[in-house]
Image (cartoon, rainbow, N blue to C red; front, top):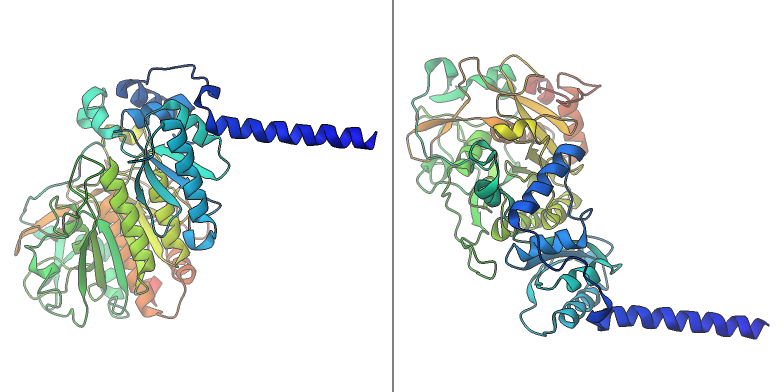
Length: 498
């Protein structure tokens, strides 16, 4: 009797093992119910409907056909996260898993070349070419795959083509090269001859400079780069009372519509947004009558990772992933600030954020800035991640009235006053030398808060990330009980550095 049971079990295991092998070797085993891909319009409509009804959209929770449709409509490029961890160094068999995935793709696609587009050296993440729906179904059955997503599906570009809200939505790039004369009511002059934005007095930043100026702290900035024409963010970075610090400019963005294109586009800002963010954080306390940044003695490491603030498409998402991993590996960087995002999660960026966080970085991300999408989407990605601090902008003299184009929600951690009753926002250096401009939204709120963190950390250089964060919370409006939509609120920076 025992022998019979043994043989039955043996036959069962052989049968199931063969079944699994057949599944991977014989494409005919996978039946496809819907053979035609959805159109880009249908995909966007489904994404929008899901966000409106559930509050969040996820590729992982979508059907095989839906994911394949988006891959098909996005240059047939897919992003795969695999292994038990995002970190290759923590996965001894990562290469074997990657090879197994590629074999499955080659088996179902019926080809052995031009399958692998890229393989990340730090993350368990690859980009591959997939044409067949059967391949997607087979891959999603594999236990070692954490996510399978379209890598070049352009949601915002499609909204511009098909979306009813496209022309006034958050598809706005956030770019601009304007120069504006500042209203004298929007700044105060501080020695040696710099303009301190009106918001500095609201957050007690000028008084905090008696205790800390950000010296010795390096902030990593992931954005659209820095203007080569703005000398105060270049050769004159150490002008006036700013001294002994450095600015390093890097470019990891490929300016091409084709995913298989290579060659970075350089570090120079071709949007204007990144220049404004760098100015907000660390413009020098200059003697030229120009705006000063929050942490005017902090170092900057800037990355041109995308063409604009909307992370749409392969090269922008890839650039941001690379920037996070490189800043994670830069032992001199303590703080990372990114005022860009997406309305749903991007797996490779999520892996990059987790990687940087695992290296001890304090990460600030914009909670979201838009017009019609303000009532459609809450806090955007990656600001909603637990590894990041989500920041939004509020109106002058408030801590719970968001700016006209700012997002709010349960994931917000801090706020910053950046909108006046007059409608004016925060004075910054212009893209062009010796000129000024205004910048607003959750973008400038995020950059300002990253500067505040640099002041706190410079005052306490031996502190950990959590100690810095706790001090910021203790110095904010709603401590110890955060507001349901605005987190801990506005930070009193003087209190935070004393």
